Structure formats: structure tokens, C-alpha cells
Length: 278
Length: 268
Image 1 (cartoon, chains in turn red, purple):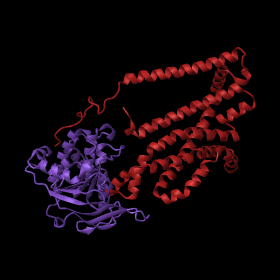
Image 2: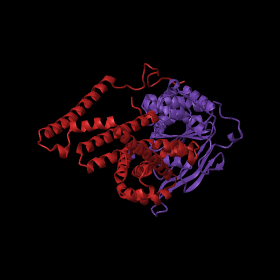
Image 3: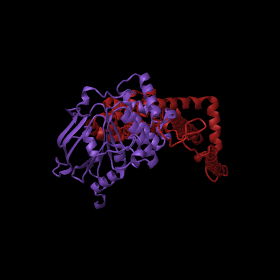
Image 4: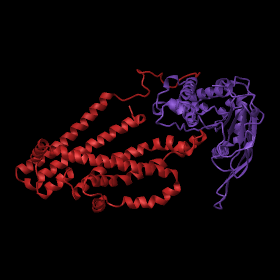
């Protein structure tokens, strides 16, 4: 019926938008990766050289080769996997529980401006408490087992999740809400079909942020009292002045954090396909 | 799509009648500012009415008042002869912003209104598909809005408005952000859809040529506080679903010139 199309006809060989060459992107990505590896190699090389030549104390600072030695040893005796698994599980469980609770609270605050105004100062107050300050109480309440670490990770996450999801919910374009109303939407339909999906961007930003927070919470919990986990390994090696072992456990912690962040990014891409920019 | 019922009982009363509408902002804080002084407008069944006015004359306020999105200070808004309470039924609404939901494909955006009214999934998809085909987006059903051009997005918005089969369409500068060619094509599509299905259309615009070429009646508003300044019944000797023919017909330029002088654009 229309007289003319202002854009190309659809079809597999006629993509809707001009995309920059895939290879150009790859080349630039490769360059960045190369530069990052060079920085890392230079840092490790300098560290190794200084400690090997006794300009700096290998006892105080450890050395990359000693750290690698401990990593191999911990991998072969299985403690590396066991500790990483324990800390990872605590982190993931705390992350999931904290974000579920926080997101549900944050989004439902959209429903009532009055309630959100009432609770706002309380949320800020709770958010300003350092999680570590709660650790002794958590251990009294939940014991020294797995639950107290999950509780610590949850507490590190929940307030951030409330704030980011609430910010997403109230940031919805008022014209968009009016449009839903003119289409005959009820308040619940506006919430379900507009507010929740529109908040996903902010919710995922919160998720990427809180992966790290959950890990910190779990490790603080392990510092307070534990028999396994990466925090336990760091604390124990530190008390015994085995510096390279502290660093080895730290390396495992960093790898765990990167892995979890990567997974969250993947999940985000799968759940928000419309934001893929090809 | 079924055509609207031309011989239904409501056809006798005009779908929309506005009497002595007035809107004053800030009365409650003691600094009243009168935006709309006195506007009376009526929209007959199957009629296209355009409202033009100088910028800042409260056109969007008027639309919000009609939709019940804002309380009025005085006057009456009658939908099918009954005083409006809240959102009027069977009215479609379209703005300059397409307001498509970015997480929904073109098809899913069109079917949004049907979904809100619990139309079964099969029927929903079928009706939305047909509409997209009619509006010239046959191959773009599964595209996300981010992959569509501005004109295509506005077409999807038009299809979404039509999907609910509103008897009355309220449009606020729907094509203002588009380039001239795209605008003409969309105006054609719109005129054809609205006239073939005997729907009523109230168009708010600042584009005098658009108003004259599309509408049966053009209402010119004054500067603030706004009143109706002039009303023109547009009689053009042309196919009223062909915007190019309308623009080339005799009399078109006269209407445009008269309305321009009513608007007193040079003064502001």
C-alpha cells in the first residue's frame, strides 16, 4: 500500500544497518589484548627481576615464580579447586539471593511514591553500614558455617540492588506510561510490560557491579571464621607469613571474579537481545 | 480489519465534542497562568479535523485534556455525548515520539494494545501482521526498533495505534520529526487507512500544509491564552487520500495563505 520504502528491502543479504567491518573490530580488539598482555608481562618481569636479584626481599614480597609454584602445588593437592569452589558457591548464592530480594524491593517501590519516600532514608542508612561491621553479628546469628558467608555476600549486594532497580523503575519515560494508559493498560500491566523490562538495563548494570561485592562479602565472612575457601587460605597463609601463598590465593580470587563477571555479561546478552549492536 | 460501523447508533452523536474548555495552571499556588481561554471543537464521525496554532499555544495541553490525562479548569469534554471520566474508550493516541518499546519486535509492538486487552495470541499476531503489511512493513515483522529508520518506526507506531481499532484517533504532530518525502508517504497511508475505515481523526500540528492537505476542517488557534481564531472547511477538488494531488489542487494555496496570516507568525 505504501508508495515508496525509505529503507532497503529486508533479507539475509541485506542487513538493516550498515555495520563496520568485522575484521577491523577484531584487529583493534587484538591490539588491545596484546597491549594488556605486554603490561602484565612487564609488571611480572620487573617483580621477578627485583626479587631474584635480592634488591627487594622475596620473603616480604613473594615472587611470580614462587606464586606460580604455590598455584601448581595447590592445584595438585586439590586445595585450589576446593577453596575456589567453596568461595564461588558462597558468592553465587549470596549474589542471587541478594539481587532477588533487592530487585523485588526496588521495583515494587515504583508502585507507591509514598512508600518509597518513607523508606528512602532507611535504605540510605542501611547502605552506609560497612558490611564488615556486621560480620561479628552475622556469625553470632548464623554460626560459622556456609550460611553466615552467604549472608555476608547477600548483605553486600542487597542495598545496591534495591537502589539500581528503583532507579531504573522511576526512570521510565512518562510519555511511555501515558501511552500505555491510552492503550488501556492497568497499573499492573504498566508495571509488568513496561517498568520491569525498561529497568533491565539498570538492573544488569547493578548485577555487574554486585558480583564483586558478593565476592568481597564472602571473603570477609571467611576471614572471620572458616575452615575452607579462598578467604580462609589467604588468612591462614598470611598468619604464617607465607606471602607467595597469599598471592596465589589472590590470583585464584581474581580469576574467580573475572569468570563470574563474564558469566553475568553473557546472561545479560542472552536476556536483552534487542540491545545487541551489530 | 473490519470497517468501523457507519450506521451504528453512536454515529448520530459526534464522537468528540469540546465546549468552552479552559485550562489555568498554577491556580492552587496562587500564580494562575491561563493557557487555554476558551476552546470549542467538535469532531464528526468519519471526519478529519486539524488543529493548528502558533507555537506555545497549548496544543499538547489540549490533547492531554481530551485524553483525561490532566484535569480541566472549566468546560466540557464529551465523548459520544457523555462527559469524559478518565481515559476515553476506543480512542487511539500517537505522538511525535514513536514510543516503541525497544525490547519488542515491530510485530510485538503493534500487538501491545491487543495484548493489554487479552486478545488471544493467534488473533493478535494475525491482526498485527496484516496491519504491518498494509502499512508497508511486510518484511520487517521481527525487527527490533533499533534496526528501523525513523519513518519505519513511526509507521509501526501508527500500526500500533490502529491495532486497537479506535473509532477516534488523536495525533499530536505525528510526523514532525520526519523528512519531507517520508512525511508525504506516511500522510498518504494514514489518510487512506482512516478514510477507508471511516474513522475520525483529530490532528494537532504546526504544519499548515499538512493540515490543509489532510483535513476536512482546519481550526486555527490564537496565541496564549488560546481561543479558536478561525475555522476553515476545506473543499479541495482532489482525491483526499492523495497528498500530492491535494497540494496541487486549486484552492490549496489560498487556504494555506489565509491560515498563515491567521497565525501571525511574523509577530512572534
